[in-house]
Amino acid sequence: MGFFKGFTQVLRRELRRMRDFPVYTTLSLILPVVSFAYFAVLLSDGIPRQIPVAVLDLDGTPLSRQLTRMIDATATCDVRYQLTDMDEGERMMREGRISAIVRIPSRFEADIFSNRQTNIVAYINGLNISANGLLNRDIQTTVTTFSSGIQIQMLEKKGMSKLQAYSQMMPIAFDRHILFNPYTNYAYYLLPSFLPMMLMIFSLLITVFAIGTELKYGTAGEWFATADGSSWAALLGKLLPYSLIMILMSLTMNTLMYKYLGVPLNGSPGLLILAGILFVLSYQAIGVLMITVFSNLRLSLSIGGGYSVLAFTFSGLTFPMMAMSGYMRALCFIFPFTFYTEVFIDQAMRGAPVHYSLPHLGYMTLFILLPLLCLPRLKKISTNEHYWRRM
Image 1: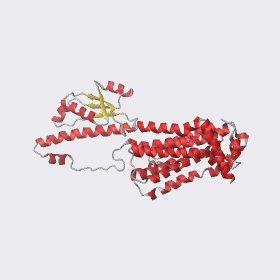
Image 2 (image 1 turned 135 degrees about the vertical axis):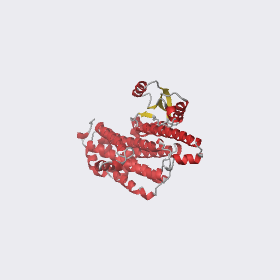
Image 3 (image 1 turned 90 degrees about the horizontal axis):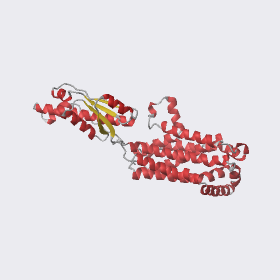
Image 4 (image 1 turned 120 degrees about the vertical axis):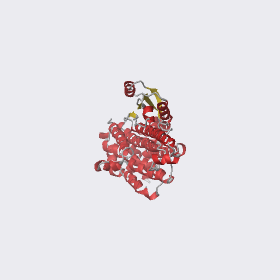
């Protein structure tokens, strides 16, 4: 009965603190919702469109103007500028006004009609990998289509049928199938990364903040006294409100992604909900470990923020894990985000059988056990004034 009494007393005390200090509600409820809304609006289109492009047309013929119109008609390219020379284009590229320059050479039309090879040159800004890939794909596809169309017309004038001309142009047909994200929609790839990352950051930081403020303001002794000296009652009573709020945020995140933003859900919804719960609890457990080890609010918040940001880097979403060195690959496994990402990919995108995701859920569960390692120290720093009132 002592545990339940202490747990209830700490829970009531924490609810009063949440009422009296709005910063707790802001960190656990308002900021996560704002961050979800921000990324949802940012990535609502799914694919970057209308990226500014400049064309240097040194030929000025109907054929070169047709090619310019075809480039402008792609979803990615927006031909906003007609250049007079490359110096002007270079200056605009350095100023960040355009992301690509397409140079059409002089005698473009004459060379084509004379059956001589001509070259289209594209200068694409490679600093933004996403935009670079899309521009390169669309410009190259447009030029290839334009070239093929001209060749087919020439072959038809020589008496070939359209089918014969096409077969001669493309003797080997390449049939490509993009699996799981056929539209290469960036929202499907980034939203399930950014939204859980926000959930992760706030789950960890609110945990560190809730315990760290007890140490910073010297109220940790009162906190443990309210729990009748029970470490478990003190910890669970304090964290339960934030756990429930962050789990609610996880459900809100899933509803936003899969119902309103159209992210595919090909697997088990129940497993994704369970993964979200374990994800929240695992980062709360890491937050408890950090504030207990460092017993310093500012240091723990700084390290917790850095640790959270690194999780995205080591998740394998931006740089594949299989391409990492052995030591770097090992670091991926100190972040629950890595395992949550694997569950998402398996269940939402691939529609894999449930048993494929069970090991990843097990790994996340191991993180939840971390407070067992530091519970004695948590009681020590909370009942010893030597650890209080640090920044």
